[in-house]
Image 1 (tube, helix red, strand yellow):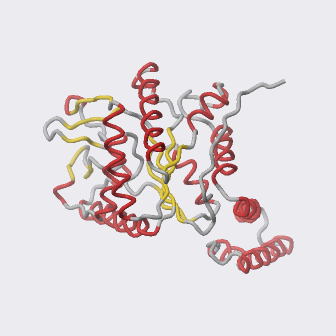
Image 2 (cartoon, one colour):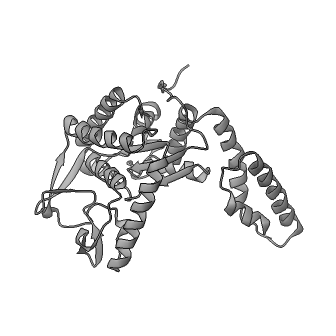
Image 3 (cartoon, helix red, strand yellow):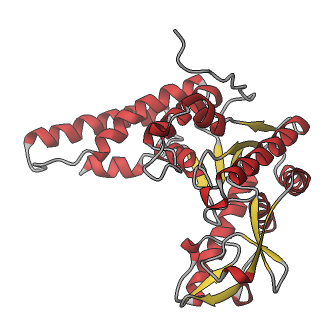
Length: 324
């Protein structure tokens, strides 16, 4: 008896390998995939502007990496006792203006250099809604809890979304012709917009990215949204807020991503690395015992053997730990 529908997931050509570099951009859900890849020692750069939700903010951030835009004091505002940027997540905010600018520009420089050589980009869109700062007629990536009267909230239509992202993709492919782009739509529910409005918003994103995938041979769609909403289909796969997918759901989505987008040889390496990473995260109760010293020695040998076959995988932190 079949208890759930399955989804046919098309695989790209070629598949992701451990030697590839991956830029991850977009909503909080993209960090589930990006974070998991980073923990498994893929070469990953995540959200150089911080978490972004709407297509305009994503496109603007990517274009700034191409241009290596450098921020200055004119790009900041003092709000709620800290310096903020309308184009960045609050993770970049701070009380020292100069340090805020330095942090933003260091991130820009890293993103610019990384994007030059990146093999893959994963873009997760969260919402079609965006906010425009009224006094400057400027779309913002983050409102930073400023008064609602400062902004106009609006839902992008499909044509607006496609035009903004298509222009950005064209520039990306000119900047780095070998880049391949994977779009996903976040299964996180934006309930503050309203249930009906959230569904309209997600539908517009899905149709937009399918149009882009149909147009560009280097653009793919991974159905993270459908895997949670249509396959799992149960509130037990959400956290207590009934908005964010829980650990079981994100693990399921990543397993499907791995099966469909990562080459078999790299999946084998992922399994080998899981054992090493689990051992690295093990916290001994009695670190001074002979048993623990033997544990360290055994895993140091395993890492050294692994590195001989896979020198491109960075295990320097693990080597330092097991060498101790």
